Length: 386
Image (cartoon, rainbow, N blue to C red; front, side):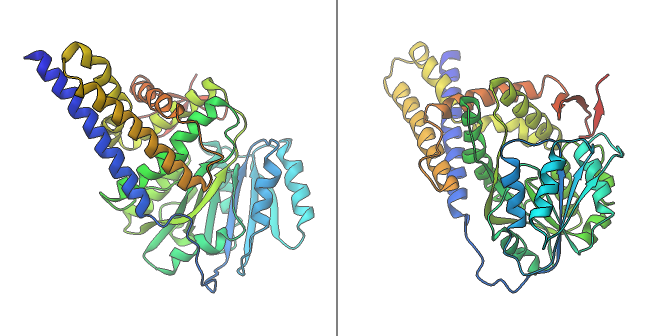
């Protein structure tokens, strides 16, 4: 009896994970990914806040992409660094000199009003904002020339309080990064869309977030987020709590990361997982049910011991293969290319790594962020580890 129950449980979990993966794929297919606006007449003035720390071979082109915007409205660009000796300062100064027609400044933000260094920089940049719309973007984000024209469009609706967008890992240079590319370029964006089938989006994705200055002031400005690890999540969540809509722009931006090995990817994924666990503990706990490799694989491994029927292992293998096909299809649509896809064998590797990360998320509250070890409190705020 116990054997039959275990076999039925593993089979049910395998089929449930398949159903969730299929739902995820359908939700992604319904979203107008990569669609561009045609009416460019709406062009309110925007201030871009760009907190920076360090730079690499990709930094120049990523920052230049913001100077290259084909946008008819006014643009103010504020680059912020915590240390005047930071190597990125030279890059920014050269770009400002190269683009004299742009309203751009480099600001040294030496104060540390909170545990989150990025938000500490934003607090100081906020004082210099000129325009009614504020766009915050991570340092490694590269955008197409029509990005501003597209990301501003949802703000025609006065009920829209914040616009954000999906991001793709553009340069997976190592096997570890190609594994992470499956998580970002196949699963993350489609899982976000899957969640919007259940409720309106109530958080923001941090690669590029555009909001109204008045709403930022309404939630207490960036100072209210000074100790939050997930400042992007909290910014969107607090705006949504006040009854404003969080919109997704169909244009996808690119993240260009420095090369990472398996240890780097593990630490990155673990920090991300512990952040999500604190922000959304119940959904994150049950997210393991959607692991469409773990459950079919357990069913496959247990089938010879639990059942003499050939159909069980064949069904498990079929579910594993369908998971790979779905992931490759999502990557191809997201990247708009077959050439940059992660190899199929990395899909189950990513899923099994994700299962280990899920477990690790509940086994501690320490994260490593920007070279510092921090302890994550239950309310999502940070305190430096001593």
